[in-house]
Image 1 (cartoon, rainbow, N blue to C red):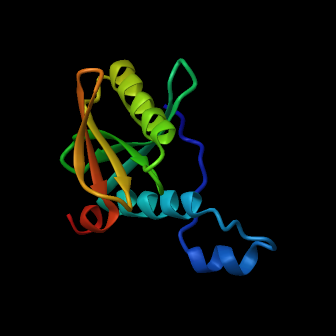
Image 2 (tube, rainbow, N blue to C red):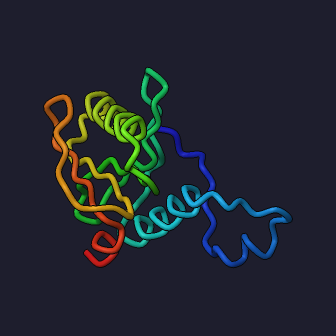
Length: 129
């Protein structure tokens, strides 16, 4: 688990203070997911697998349940989908964490990958859970 990643508490402040703010929706989306996870419990960090695949968040809910969470602004590309699933399933094997979630603006479904269940949840639904 790697604890060092930086997120902004105020998106507006970032846009006002950074000379050339990124227009990358992915960074903004990941930041929004981080803020919600932080509100729900403790973000322990992110996980970099032995193969170099990154899972955005290792999260511990207030009830003690640990989860691996990916924030993905666009899961429509098959290569992106495969990358996100590979990172989650590999990290799950390495950490023993079985609660796997991808938060995305897209549709809701359940994926099966390498014998593991991954919940794909639209951000609007996930934010109101």
